[in-house]
Amino acid sequence: MRPFTTLEADACPLPLSGIDTDQLIPARFMNRTRAEGYGGCLLHDLRFDADGQPRPDFPLNLPRYQGAQILVARRNFGSGSSREAAVYALSDFGFRCIVAPSFGDIFAANAVNNGVLPARVTEEACEVLLARLVSGSGHMHVNLEDSELRLDELRINFMLDPVWRAKLLNGWDDLDLTLSYGPAIAEFQERDRTGRPWALPQVSSR
Image 1 (cartoon, rainbow, N blue to C red):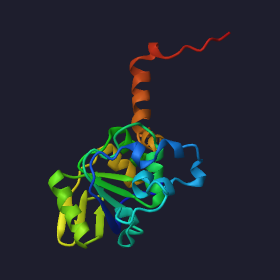
Image 2 (image 1 turned 180 degrees about the vertical axis):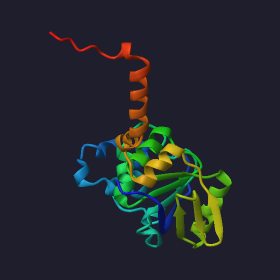
Image 3 (image 1 turned 135 degrees about the vertical axis):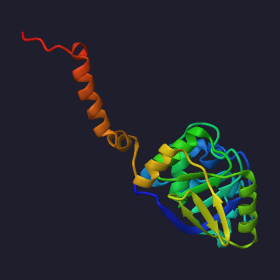
């Protein structure tokens, strides 16, 4: 996984609350392999009508937001089932950062494990960002080291669990995170071996 330090990209507003994982990737599309890609299925039932035609007023279909790598939505983004494919769909579509006041816990963890930043902001800040994006301003700068979003003259701090922040900054998965504690683990093992020799497994001489 590539490290995430900064991102400068266009942002797309999605002024909806409670976008759940079934909306992000409807279950009927989850029989495909990851190699086939999930981007075309992202928010399918919101992006397309019953005849499969793009809804012209849906933000992700508007020409001005094509190529956006940052998505700004309202509260409770990614709630619902634990399907990791919801993050695959966002990532394959091109999104590397999701900004919202709150996220589903499992969704947020899956996002981090796939290199997508779930940046949590206040509801007030979210509404300001959405208004700016709808009115015309669309280029944002994300700085994970400073936990800051910039849009024109706006400076907005976002929140992220410190462990998730470390994983994204270093491009680590869970195994890499564990290995980063290698020296501390080795020190504990040596200290424990000296202090509690009786607790070590005994190797039979037979």
